[in-house]
Image 1 (cartoon, helix red, strand yellow):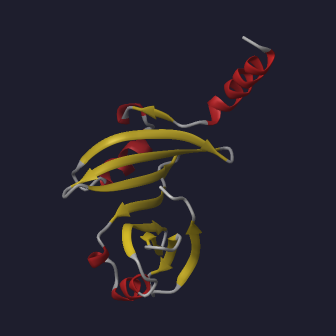
Image 2 (spheres, helix red, strand yellow):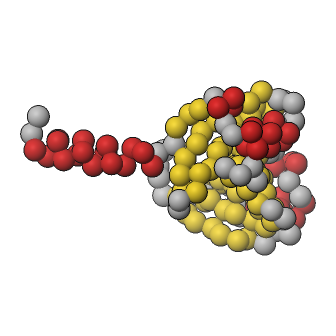
Length: 154
């Protein structure tokens, strides 16, 4: 193994503790476990990841809802529900959001409803033929919060 490879492996070893890791729901602190279970809508909790962000521990539970819909629950170590991210169909979004997204041209490929406290936004991936795809975040009232072009040719 050459010196460059050793340096890369050493750097990765330093980074690894900051990465997320899977844990069992039973191994989560009780407040975290209670919040996850009470927000899982009686559906299967697929996995729980834990990671550190800005010195805080965050748990992300992936829940498989009925109809093949994913729900992610973001929970603090103290048991506060920080954010939810739920796959939804375009037809289930508010009319103002649908109107805005349809006005951008292309096809909505993926749509997530994101709830942080009282704030609800919708994150959409829009595929456009002959133009860069878009990643758009729209407020519940239909106003575009952020829009970026995705120039990947995947």
